[in-house]
Image (tube, rainbow, N blue to C red; front, side, top):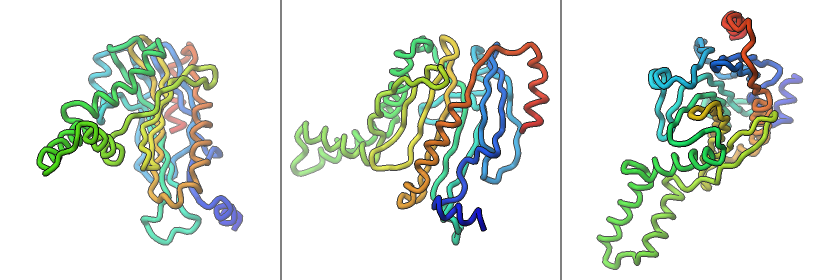
Length: 268
């Protein structure tokens, strides 16, 4: 009864619960990455995760990398948390979901340790992909230009450009807000968002340089299933995101690091 009353007061159930956290220890060559992540409230088949990530190895990266749109990365771990109404009447009544994913990225295009270069890089990768030969924005531009050419009175050049940008804002991949540098736990992260003005769902990214050509990326996905209920859980999701980020620490690898495999197995 108390839990139900609390759920009605909060206007939702679910989301990350910091009363039930998993303490992760991951080896990044000569460094130890630790973080505390609330256990998922999404039913899933348990799976083992790697604990060692030789992020400077090109062969390792190419062997394990995944590709999604303009993102090329090695997956480390993922947790998902659903936000639900206090009383669920239908299977599709979810308010939305917050997920956290850690991954390693590599690039030879910049010196990752230079955060000014890294800020430009993450935005350029997005722009170059979506404005590339097969990108969504390029397709919208080409289709709109062709449509204009078939009109009795085609768009004037400035009108055509405005029409293209308007359609990209609604249907395509509009320009991102500039990436910025933020300090969390004395670590200097590069933060940026992939978002659209007409969509509440978004992706938040935190990037931490590890070496000249590799960086850690923490991705938070705010998936909004019911826009009319988003305000109920948006603040809690953002606060949870901040709390998770504040647990991330990078330290020298301890001499007894061989025991980490056993320790992580017990905490999984």
